[in-house]
Length: 138
Image (cartoon, rainbow, N blue to C red; front, side):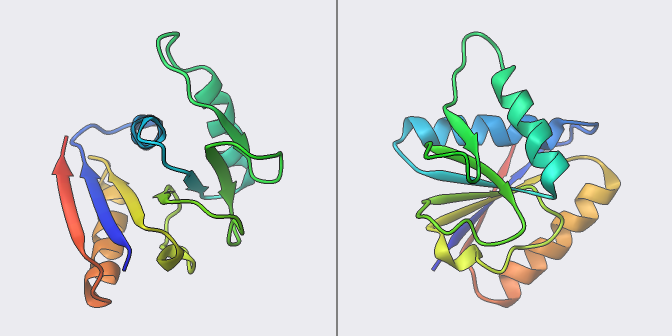
C-alpha cells in the first residue's frame, strides 16, 4: 500500500509548497527514484517547470513536463501519468485517483490557513482509507 508522507512547515507564502516539492524531488532523485509531481493545473505545471530550472546553481534536477519525453522527475496535472514512477508529490488541492499506483506519496502542508485546511482534509482522506501515514515537521 502507498505510504503517505506529510511534510509540515510553519512557513507561509507563495511558492513555499513548490520549494518544498523541489527539495523532496531532489532527495528522491538522488536515491534513484522516479518522481511524478502532480500539479493543480497546466499553468501551475508550466510555472513549476520554470522554477525548477531556476533553482540555485548548486542544485540540479533533471525534469520534464509530462509528454515531453522521459526524465527522472516529471511534472504534470489532471490524468494518470501513465508511465511508472516510484514517488508522487501531490501539489494539487485533492488526492489524485491514481495515488495507489505509487510506492510513496508526499504532501506538503504550509502555514497558510487555506493550505492547512486542505492538508487536514487530505490527511483525513488517507487515514480513513487505511494508508500508512508519517509526518515530518520541518
